[in-house]
Image (cartoon, rainbow, N blue to C red):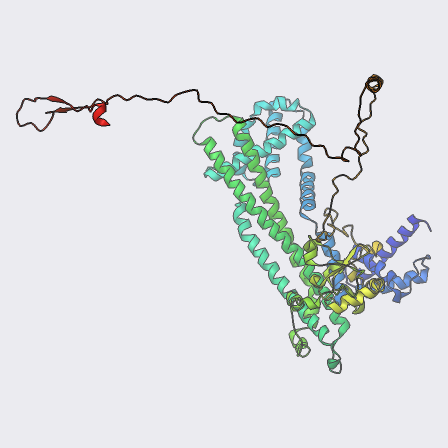
Length: 626
């Protein structure tokens, strides 16, 4: 059977299953049916041989099993699969969603845009109709108001006429199609910026919602709703984990036990729901951060515009147009955040029905008897109980094992862990018992993958034969296909992935960087020097040295001293030291003269009106001074 024929047969099987379910009152999507078909074929219990073509009996049996599985309304496992398929089909990251949202809006307005760019208006009436189309296109594209609101139309028309009067339609029609689209985009941004500025000044803003106020009310409410749902789901998971952990103890196995299979399915449902809610919570926090940043930037931009414009009647376009364009772009960002927030809310409320079944089965009255003598601990509390260094992986017992610890690994917090952070040993031994792992015990690296464990004993058991335990975990996923996405086993089951986003292609996986105290020593000269300093390349220099040596041999006396002979005898020379003589060539003498000193009396303190001054000579002679 060729590939095309096989695909045709599979499509017919999927279509027939969907029709049978619809006949019995259960509407299912073809994506869900395709996932169930592949899961049932891979399940060893169903005994389908994938290496040969399916017979008619095999096809009928496959259809029957798929219909029975899809119509099972008492299966938390099926609800988990439905939840996964729904989330995969409706959720995408911020960048992809915004690109897709923009593409959808552009497709809706393509007809109006084509009418504008392909227009061949000549008469006055045709030009006026074209101008009205441009106004309507700007309103629709900016998302500020409705083109049927006369006040919005008047405001947009006034703003457009200030930058693009109807007299400019002639040059506009002479442009190429790409230039027309580029100018229309620029006009949209400038007109939007003008309207936002007028609204901020209190002079307009018809049909413009207060997006900062709406986001300020919607984001906290969304965060609160997600937190409440996340808290309830985690509490259910903690209870299921505590009960399953309790009945692992032989002391309690004699008591009345719950339906372990149903409870494990419920635990998987809770963990999957928790994972999706955590993704929504992270996106809601991103919306909150981005919206706050945009609000601050918009406020600063409008204040800057107000300072530039003030009460001036004319302002250079080079100063205000870039400001208007940037303000419009910021507003577009706020609109995107509001759309993203509404999508997150829709997904949040759509996920609730998929986790309702296990809540109806295991109500508090049912769980209460089983919770006696059980320690209901959160994931953080379980990890905290293993904080003792004695609970760490013992590297002395397994010296050849590659183990990563927090203090020896630089990027320990960002290391991707297999099985979505659940204990690898428990995933293999305890079917569907998802026990959170404690990375601080030690992350085991095996064949490029990182495995974490809930206890030291589990880590030691896994290291003794890792290949066996990895195969056991993979085999468990064949019987319970909801584990494939939850534990991220898409590489082992490449054909069963219900969507193309098995891994985050935009995120680079960072390899662990281990830390250790090391020392290095560098030799000063790694290679011994072999330079011969007596080497001469010049032939004439060699000849000169030869002539010199030949001339030296003809002398009457000569001597030669070498490196080996220069230290063989001591040579002493005696010299006469110079005499020390003193000579006096000058005579020291000096002379002294009297220092003049005079005193003038009568300058002050006189009783009469006339001042009589007298000079008294106080100079001391040289003889008297000595």
